[in-house]
Amino acid sequence: VQLQASGGGLVQAGGSLRLSCVFSGDIFRDIFRAHSMGWYHQTPGKQRELIAAINPGGGTIYADSVKGRFSISRDNAKNTVYLQMDSLKSEDGGAYYCVARQGARVPRPDERDYWGQGTQVTVSS
Image 1 (cartoon, rainbow, N blue to C red):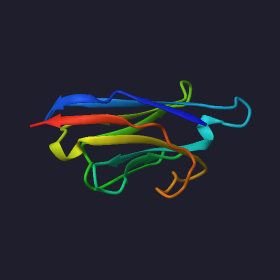
Image 2 (image 1 turned 60 degrees about the vertical axis):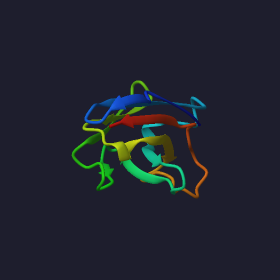
Image 3 (image 1 turned 45 degrees about the vertical axis):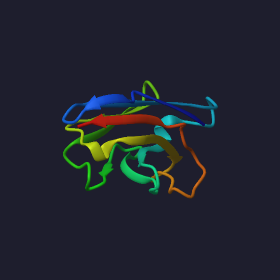
Image 4 (image 1 turned 90 degrees about the horizontal axis):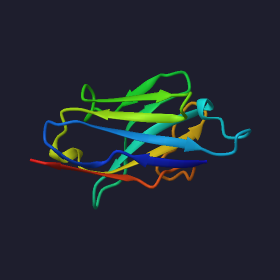
């Protein structure tokens, strides 16, 4: 599985960004709709934090810090997961990593499957 994240950038506090992550892999073995997808957030010196995830059935979870501001969605026809980020705060800045794992949950930080390369978000105050 390969994960290609995009959409990061510089935004003012209170603004919005939408991150995208395209999933690809073996056409017969790596079936996007069978994978849970998620986004981790990391800032320097801190551990990665799972902020949003969506399972194959469309069920979602969010970290308390982003509830009501961020929304995760998936388009199974495009093998893509999105993270809509609204009302951005300075503490939302950092690297965002797209993750995938076959089954009902996303990978924990110590698990290897599967991580994208990260996209950087900078929020200016």
